[in-house]
Image (cartoon, rainbow over all chains, first blue to last red; front, side):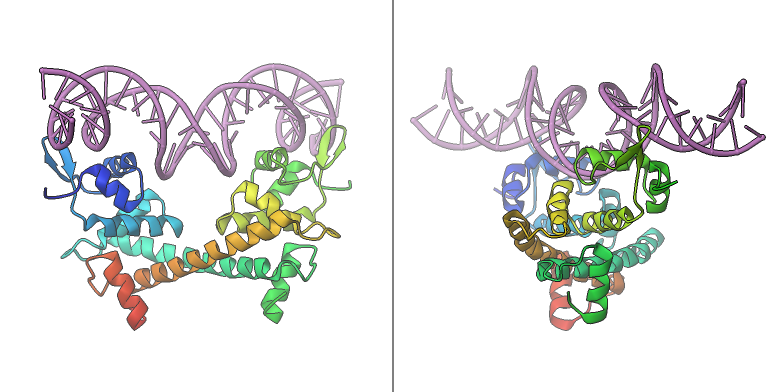
Length: 131
Length: 131
DNA sequence: CCTTGACTTAAAGTTAGCTTTAAGTTTTAT
DNA sequence: ATAAAACTTAAAGCTAACTTTAAGTCAAGG
């Protein structure tokens, strides 16, 4: 047997088979070969699927991920919309990273500082490194 | 006039007035005083609202934010569920931070490396610091 | 041969987190 | 005094990203 069935790929990727069909329908995944009408996948797709997961977790929506993935088409140079999206997204992600750091410190401190407000806590963290 | 109307607070917080009502309905915001049936808010609430925004951006859902906010009730010590949530969330946020860093590097590199897969790119970044 | 389980499509249903609508009351500005 | 703007509630509507359902086809084991 050459290639994985949709169920087998889904199991390996730890997602629902119907999610795979959905991704195909919205263009996130290329239409695979068929054998007797049934989809056959190459195991290499796991990599793409995992990338999709990370992209989602870092704040890309499905439309943005389809653009992002254009960057992995061998031989193609990056499209204008790829570069534009990348520039915009980069600053969003930097902002999110800052927020993440503040939030981690707040969780770490267990609010031992007894600050009454978020801004008080945040400022202390920024000036004194912890709270 | 003492206190802000819902519209005024909404404007300052740059969110929809109906979002404020919604937050109240799900317990994210305390029921404010009323004047002739209309809500009157203290400007200090802005701080809480901004914290809610950051919490959302860093991956807390509304239920989790309500727990998180228990930490800002003056006089109360942290509840068990606060500490449990904090522990669990902390590791989630650390993971997200790593993903964020990889993703930022990928955007930065503009895929100049011409990696064909996400894992190839990620590995290169981890070993060589860039791609 | 027949049953069982995995596959197929198209369409409807689900959840979170709002947002809009409808129908009515209050406040504010002229 | 009155018209427009802002408020009230309850309920319906919206969007993204799936997930489930219905009705049917295909393939492997006993």
